[in-house]
Image 1 (cartoon, rainbow, N blue to C red):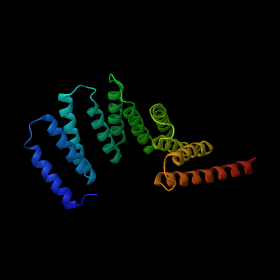
Image 2 (image 1 turned 90 degrees about the vertical axis):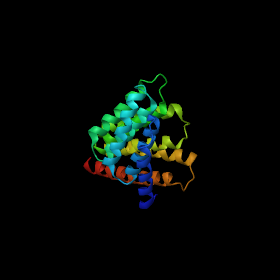
Image 3 (image 1 turned 135 degrees about the vertical axis):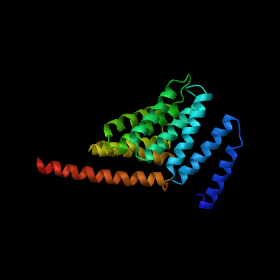
Image 4 (image 1 turned 120 degrees about the vertical axis):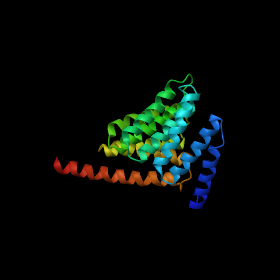
Length: 220
């Protein structure tokens, strides 16, 4: 993590640099660096100003479905999500998704990332059925392009388990969380942070399932 004085010096450097460059690619690079710096400092409004400026420059100089447009749309969507401006966040994530889907050679990994971003916004709004749809779409792509024991697939299983838990589908949540752990144990060290987190979640879901079953038996 950069210290405050380091951030300030970096900001001064980039602010001075952008006044001197004339090539649009150099301008965009500097705007991205400034946007990232402001994001790190939680100055999200200033970060958005820089990323929107870089987006405007891109739109004047590259084709409509250029991959860097996808990246910029996603970054803007992430910042709006941090601000809990969910409608704007979804708007930019959907821009990114449409951009990827219209490419001559769509990047499956990037499309999966877009699905994840959209699912996360729906989850943040407690719109769990919508979140489940997009997390499943992400998983479908991952299962095509990644090895069956890839840690990212474990994360996707865990994300789906969480949504199922929120929908009170506890038994299914346990099943998906167990799938996540099975993959973790194949691909990660036993003491890895991801493995530990997934095990903790499994225990929580199992307890809820047990409580639900007890309540169900007491009513019958």
